[in-house]
Image 1 (tube, rainbow, N blue to C red):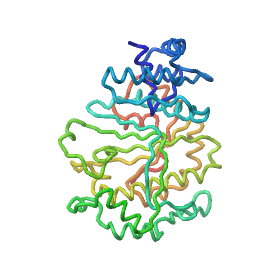
Image 2: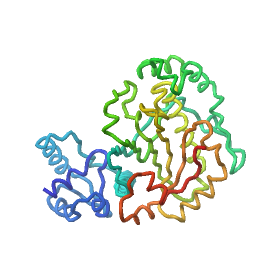
Image 3: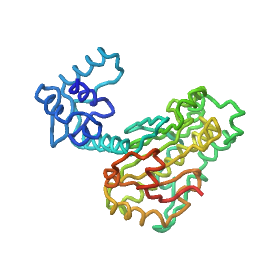
Length: 334
């Protein structure tokens, strides 16, 4: 049974594992070697993935156990394997850091999110000096058109029936507003008091389940950070536009407040390897201050190190307790 559970770890979203990551998942590390000997797994540089035989066995187990999971790919390149492994390892180390009793933790590794308008770097922001950024997207004609056509936000928007997602997408097409996408290394939707919110009907424009959840967008950050400032600013800007779309077009009135009028958080979190990396990134981004989030408030930006996550011996009660203990705010909503 334990080897079957190890095999079923290798689903579409988690196709690559190593011994440490299997340990964090609470499964038998030795199962990796046994499955490799049976021809179900292959290993390269310590990273395991499914073989064709492994995929077939995975599918058979899912049929037997009425499981809807799909097997991971058997033909990933080295770079893809490293990315998938990092995301899976981070997910399980993070999950081991907090309990979220009476809540739910929904993880989406490598989640692709759409936003509009898709803008070039020059259209999105202007960097006047290393500590001063201007969000030029705010005055872009496409953004102004979206705000003008979908003007009602906040609690008042709950009194108005929004366009369906298909109708809203058609409106974007008719107005020649380009749609872009970006990939989040790990999207976490945290739902506190999950049983209580089950009594509320699902919003028809919310396939992701953003309503009644705290939204954590985790992005991997690697040094040297100063050379990646455009990447940081573009990622932040895309989150701004994603939230703008949700607030104005898709789920207005339910992005920043839940169905019980309690705050719903929007946190962008940079994930680095070491505390030394944390302070290097803080030195780069903290001087920019509130302007990093001003057009998209309420929103926070944090940085978290895997080094400190590994040191957590006992689970914190909530993710907020975890961040209070080992997280570092870059800028917080005031």
